Image: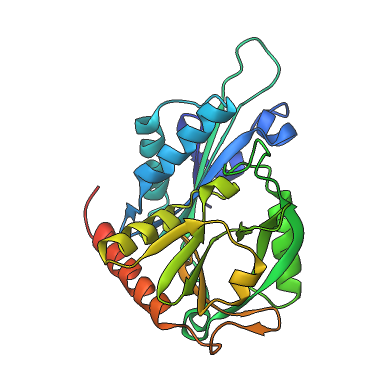
Length: 284
């Protein structure tokens, strides 16, 4: 039986309950973070909490406690389940919508880390183009909210087509992101990724890749581009903190480059792995 952190304490998952009038349950008025722990250390926890609190302020979602309280809740959950390598989810909602002083809900869960298949990294993956469209003017654009059904739906359709991910474009045809990932394109040894102005999520792995590229003198361009530039890429890869750096070798029927993980992708992946391992070798 797993243990979770709910609001103020660790409880058995079977005993947990939230209000039937919780705003996250009724209206999707909530935020979440998915995090990776290794060696008992949560990777980039401060970055995750900074993003969460920034979104909460912009969307006017009240949170239960400060960043220190949230960090404590994360580690209490990890330790209560006696996990060193884990996938952690933190969900924060506005709480019950009834009553004069509703208290926000905080839920943290942790499960044993289950990696993506090794062949995804060795051979690369296929992605498909999603028929749904992303609106940069949407109030939720760029925020990791619990209003996630469209993402799960698109990802499910991609899996039905034996693809690992589906790519989103904006309503005016600009490349945005994956359902659960950020997208990078390599062309003539330059690393490109859609600008945050497109309304993409400011991914933690995305930020890590950009920082590593800068430190290793890899030219990076954050800009807007469309399907033509995507299909003309020498390499493509996607990122999130669970998958880290995942090579894309096929976009539907179109081969990316020589349909093998590229040199730049491998270099970025190695730099990311090295940085991740160093980060998680320390004690929090």
